[in-house]
Amino acid sequence: MREVQADVTPVPWFEDRESGIRLYQGDALALLSRAKPELFDLIFADPPYFLSDGGVTCHAGKMVVVDKGAWDTSRDIAAVHDFNLAWLKECKRVLKPHGTIFVSGTYHNIYSVGFAMQQLGFVILNDIAWFKVNPPPNLSCRYFTHATETILWAKKGKRARHYFNYEAMKALPDPAPGKQMLSLWRIPPPKPWEKRYGKHPTQKPEELLERIILAASRRGDLILDPFIGSGTTAVVAARLGRRCVGFELESSYLEVAVKRVKDELSAAKKRQLVLEMGTE
Image (cartoon, rainbow, N blue to C red; front, side, top):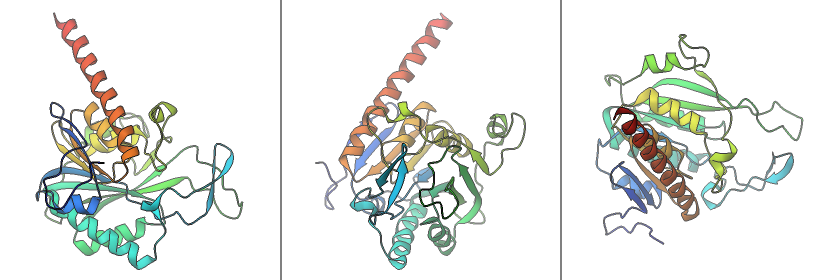
């Protein structure tokens, strides 16, 4: 196990210097606290939802327990909010003056995240509703089927001049090419091939991260994902020519992330080779 110790410089679990992809194993707060200030151009975070309390949900037509691991164990409201304040405070410290942050979550946690952002002086630019298109059914039949997650997009303060690639967003087919993109995003859950090496219980689709990274960063920018899970942010960053740093507590998820990133880096080299051959 290569967990970070307090008295030594963190050693990446995985590093590809050419692409600028680095993955670290360890607690997100501990690693964030040791990062240099104003380092990152963009942050994407999908923090724990704290749902693991013995409940059940529907997956592939079957009832399954929702316990995801110790990292997601249910906490009281005050403890959840203290956690959100702590990691968001560190994210603000390590974000460049004109950088932005996206945070994804469900109603279990996202309202605390939004309030914490406001307390810390972030300025929320958008609350995006990610419509999952084909969500799992509601087993109890006593309330509406959960079909969305909220993604908050914020900048560091009122004077920050955030970057937004308006033309790239306008060119995408949602809602239609040439039309302004709405804050309602129709993106299906991760496809089966995105889970070929194993799945993370809250894994985000690559299409979602592609949209976020294209919207709010430039080629060569440095992206942080403090809860990177199975590596989707790093995979998409490598595909789009961005550098990426990711933190993850569980080694099993990091192993999946490394395999996915290596696949993407190999595919990128093949694409580059084809381009070079075509210009000869």
